[in-house]
Length: 471
Ligand code: AMP
Ligand code: ZN
Image (cartoon, rainbow, N blue to C red; front, top):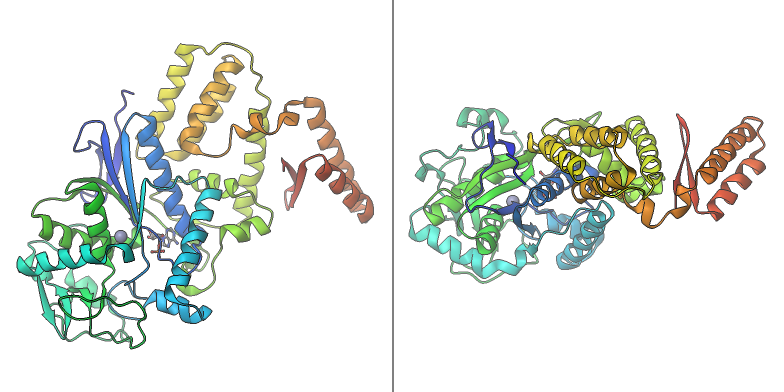
């Protein structure tokens, strides 16, 4: 498709036209989850928006290869090199081994992604699979003079770079202010910003996962895994690297430092960062202990698609505040949208001109720095536009390739929804149930819910009233 793609690039701090290294092909990398706990819906916001980016690139015709790591070793509770090992913390919490924890939460993460229709990246590689490759990379960094051994750990020497802060706007003074007093200082480091490539002198005596290395038995630092796994699978030139904004510093800054020192030239051209999902008290985070998961949303009666739509309705670069009221509004809008789509008939041959026009409008909205909410507006406009239902169905199916909101399931699984008489029957029943509830006749209200459930319709009550969904 002849479409220009514009993306905000954290590296240049402006919106730029996206041009991959090799025409028609995109090499894309995503920082994967640290598998010591369930992913919260904030983490999943990042993965949803990255998924839409990947699917958009495919929609406009790129051949995308996407790689993701699974962090199962080396990530400490501070993103620098201090604090506890997150995996060990998870293992202690649950009285299991680190590998059991890693396996369990990797599967849980994949299951959440499936529920949210997040495509599995072409290559998914756990960090613990690549220890020999990490060791090799660290050896090369030592040979080239970018790394040093101190106190039996191996460190990256950030003073060897012309501009360590190439990605972030951090500078040494900012860092001084940011340093918390309780964070112990690592006296082995030559410079404050140096970071660990390989730990041997671990302060964790009971570190379970350890490997032999030229510097002694130990384990890799967190940052090396992403440099190494991406270069292993995508080669020395990468087009887009993704992650949440909290990854910009130090994680991605350190990735660039190591990768470019190792390969000896510029590594990745575009950096795509998704802003945070916040609660009223700030960033949703695993370490705070209180966080929402997809399973919890399901327990409360929400279809995971509603959360995906909630994310798509706002721009990935803006912080997004979560509230139940906002989610309820999206649930209502999603139900209406599905019903609208379910009621499209199969009449009419695809009008090629109208199809092409709306196919392009949708791509243009996303090509404008992934404006997902305006892409959804294009969907609504298309549904209202003057064209036959057959063309509209074809366009819904085409948009679904990117939006992944189960928009076409309405035709495939829920034939009953097509029946207008049945829809008005459901609505009549919902009214009767509301009246019964008002009159405190809960037996009747429950019987109505049960009857509709028997017929494959699920009711959901919220402050705005009752909505329904095919089960
Ligand atoms: P982690 O499992 O902590 O390594 O994080 C996985 C991904 O989620 C990373 O790309 C983070 O940047 C991202 N992330 C963490 N917290 C949030 C949040 N509250 N909102 C959006 N993305 C987040
Ligand atoms: Zn990473």
